[in-house]
Amino acid sequence: VITFRGFLAAYEESIDDERRERLITTLCNYSVGETAALEGAAGLVQLAPDRNSKIFMATQVADEARHLEVFLHRLRELGVTDPEAEIERRAQPALVDFKGALLELVAGGDWQAAVFAQNVILETMEYTVFRLHAANADAVTRDVLAGVIADERRHAGFGENDLGRSLAIDPSGRARLREIRSQLDPNNPVANAGPDQSICVPVAPNIVTMAASSVIAPAVGTWIVVSGGGTI
Image (cartoon, rainbow, N blue to C red):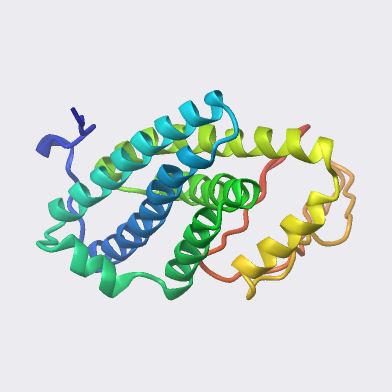
């Protein structure tokens, strides 16, 4: 049974045509990512090295199917009569290419590389994008994203923990994963947060302009406060 959260007419906001078009394009690309994760996780059930990993991947398959279903449902609510055709028309080529590359890793039986691509790169990207979108989304879309975000954080956590264990045993795998990352996303440079900068609060000026490397869609970049306080 699939339960749709927040799809009550009373909560629907008025969305102008321009915003609706942007939202449809966004949801179409979300659907590409969720399809990639759905098909990838389904294949990884067979590749999983132990029963706990198989169980996790099986639960991720169900999660990704639910995410895809709610995004398709939202597209229909927005007036899209044929979501499949609309996704095909609006999908970003780079995201479609990423999906193909991920599924090639799965088909090749490469557990470590596939988990890295799916549960670290893709899930972290989706988690970040969904959170940013939810902050400014209409009420219905925000409610849809709320449930998806919690799942994506858990999926990324699995990838981080699984790779952390394997790389602790064989640190040489880091170089291999860096190469795979560059192959999956050749247009983006290696992330660089920029030079260290210091400020003395409250002595003015108490702001800095951060100089991280830029990213190319569908990749995203975001800043977070890891300790202390501050506004980004």
